[in-house]
Image (cartoon, rainbow, N blue to C red):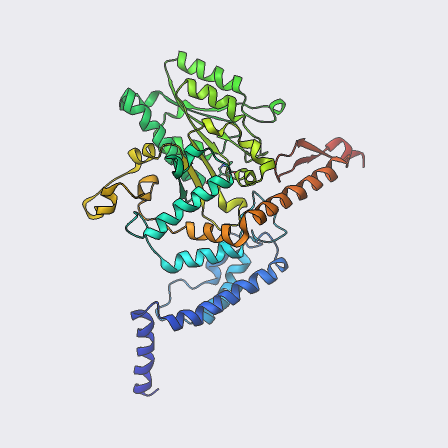
Length: 436
Ligand SMILES: *Cc1c(COP(=O)(O)O)cnc(C)c1O
C-alpha cells in the first residue's frame, strides 16, 4: 500500500473521531439502522419468542477484547443480526405473553431517537428549558386525561415528573414521606417508622424501604385473601396500624396498588386513604400497569379515592406505547420531594433557579443528570391522540374478556379471580384433566 493512500485512510479515520457527529455520516449510518429496525419488526414473528441460547453463549462468539481499529457499521450490524438477535427475548413479538406488556410503538421509538439526538442533560431548567417545560406540560396533559384531581397537577400546585421506573418513583416518595415525619419527631426515631403494603404489593416497596433505612422489622406486607379478591382490606390495615401504634411504633407510609402484579387486584383507595389520613400516613398509589387504562372513562372508577392520596404513579413504558423507561409520577406536594432530594452546589447556581419561577427536576428524583423522556411521551400523545389511545387500551381489554369467556366455558380450566383489565388469571383443574 502506498504511503499516500495510507495517510488518506488515516485521515478518514481521524475525521470520524474528531467529528463524531458528522451529519452526512450520521445520515448514512442512521438510515441503515432504521432499515435494520424496520426489517426486525417485519420478521419478528419468525424468531422463537424466548431466546434459545445457553448461559455464557455470547462470550463464545465475541472477541476477547475491544477492537483496536474502527469497524464499519455494516460489519457491526451483521454481528447484531448473527449474535445478538439469537440472544434476544422478543418482548415486542405479537406472540409474547410473559409478565406485563412492554408496549413499543413507532412514536415511542422515534421519540426516543429525538430525545437521544439532542442528548441534553436536563438537570435543571436552565440546562435545557424545553426538556423541563415539555415534561411539565405532558404531565399535566396526561394528568387531565386521567382526570387526576387538580392538586396533583401543576395547574393545582402539585405536579408531575418522569422517573425511570416505578422503583425509583416509590423510593423518592417514601424518602419524602420519611423526612416529613422525621422533621417533626426527630431523626433518631427512624427505627420506629412503619411501612404498609399488602402481600400483593410489588417488591419495589420493600426495596425502597431497605434503601431508605427503614427497620426491616417494620415492613408490613398485610395478608390478603381470595375472598377480598386479593385487595388490601381496610379492616386488616386498621388492625395492623393499631397494634403497631400500641407497640410504640410510628406508621408513616402506605403503598396502595391499582392492578397488582400477580392478579391485577385493586386496593380500595377511598377507605384505605381515610384510615391513612387519620394516622398522618403518606399514601402512594402504584398503578404501574393498570393506570393507563384509567384514561378510559369506563375504567376511571378504579382510581376513585385517589383524591385523598399523596402521590400516584403509572408506567408509560408498560401499556402506553412509550419505550422503556418512562414512569409518570404525580405528587400533591412537590416541596416534600424537594426537601428530601435537593442539593444546590455552587456550580449549579443560576438566576432562573433563584427566581423560583422554574422547575428544577434534579430535585424531584435520585439522580442529577436526567434524560429528555418527555419527548417520547409527547410524541406518543400527539401521534395517537387520546381517542386512539383509548381505543388501543379497550381493544386489549376486549381481547382479554373474550379469552376469559372462552376459558370459563371450558371445564378443564377455571378462572381464579375475575378479570379487571387485560390480564386473565386461570388455571388447569387437575381432577378434570386426570379424567381425560
Ligand atoms: C411493573 C410493576 C412495578 C415495577 O415497575 P418498574 O418500572 O419495573 O420499577 C411496580 N408495581 C407494579 C404494580 C407493577 O406492575
